[in-house]
Structure formats: structure tokens, C-alpha cells
Image (tube, rainbow, N blue to C red):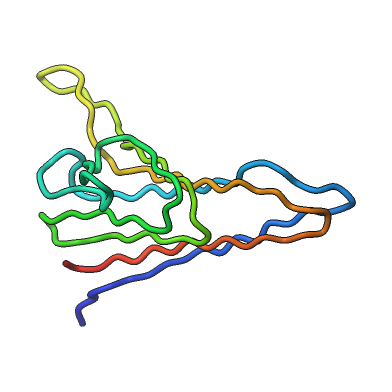
Length: 134
């Protein structure tokens, strides 16, 4: 059997208890590891195709894919409602004959939503990850 796609999801239900409302931000972080951060053919499906090893942020998105053309995989993260996305590389430091060097381990994706709930109110958020072969 050959696996051509896999999906995992998370659903969040936020609520305010008691007679006070809630105001703030809710954020979740997903760390995804592909083969390289700044190599050719490894990028986020955003304008200008930033590399997996880059850092940045974008507002009002509902999805992004991390593409690794070298291994032929796309990891698509989709969510509702629209959120602010911030991303950055996950790196470790290694010591070699050449000295200290940074090693790309993956890409951290932080999704953040503003939250304003009246007393007793609830709000639901969903995030899903689908990995597919290109």
C-alpha cells in the first residue's frame, strides 16, 4: 500500500465562564519539518515564495502550504476563521570542524486570532494539516 496523503486536525472551543467577558488573543503553533530551509524548491505558498528558512508575518489568511519539491511533498495548513500567520525557522547549533553552524530543523507556524467574548459566549476555531505528494 502506498500512502499518498495524510490529514490531522485540531478544533478549539473558547468560552468565557462566569459573569465577565474575555478579550485578548488566542494563538497556536505548529512546527513542521521538511528537508531544508533555504534550498531551491523549498518555500511557503505566499507572495514572493519565501523560503522555509525565512521569517515573516501576514494578516487575514486561511491557509498556507510548505512545499519541498526535492522530496515531492506539500504540507498544507488550513484554518478557520482567518488569522494572522507568523513563521520562522526552527534551528539548532552544531559544532563541526568549521566551527559553529546553524542547522535547519523545521518551520514554526504561529496562528493568532483576536478574541472578544461576551459573558457565557463561545467561539470555535479549527486547524487542519494535509500532507500530499506533489
